[in-house]
Length: 375
Image (cartoon, rainbow, N blue to C red):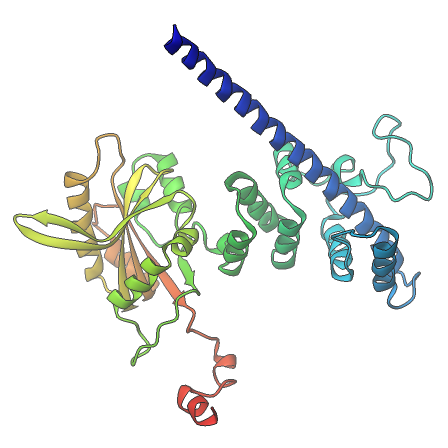
């Protein structure tokens, strides 16, 4: 009887806990939706009055200071943030347009009132790219996420891409900034690969292609090397030391298994640089790090590694392993010819580290010896 009561109590606690968490989430979503509507309405009001020179200079700064006096402790209405609200409105005004509202749309608005329901109600019929699911995801994001997106992503398709990922994968602001900086939208799905000939399931092919980028920005890694190309082991060590950031570069579905992962074939040891598991693809992912340009012989070695993983490590319910060669650079035709007749799914991606600067910036700072002399 006591055991049965404990079971009932445990079940009751879990149900109540689940209800509390759901309620908190719904409250947070509603509050966020209202805040976005407020910021959009204020942004519209500020835009219409400031862009048309109806107000004088320093109007936004004056308004911000006065608001702080009228509402002591008010947060989020600094001069810069009010300008962000204006930019938020102007970035989305073509999608959420002004139109004549029916009597049942929202409560009557006073003629001198800032309209704060436009974002929710006034969706443009012409904006066919914005579906109901897009709208829900849009309203679930915080204002700081929205501002990061509109500051970096210019097209509607690109903005919706980042909004969807933020909403469904719960990206933090740090994660969003990383993917914006690495230009995930432009690079996802463009990995040179042989998935079409080695993965028979069409849906799995698509998922595999979308799971990898053609270039990875490792801006958290700064390695000095005499020939400007870090040794693979040095690069591997730097990645493992920053494994959380590296996984952020790969994507949320990757789990790190280990580096220098050992497999034994006929009493001979072989070591795979980095081994991951991808939950979406349900397969092992082997990554080999290579300095310099891609070489065709790299695929032969990876093909061998994938065979050993499939036979010795892969579980019965998992899909075949995928290999990624991560190198400094690659030439398209060389990669295409190298992929022919390969039977294992593989791709070739490149990387950039934090030590690489565009040519126009290279001569701005003095070199290391000059800095020592100056110091």
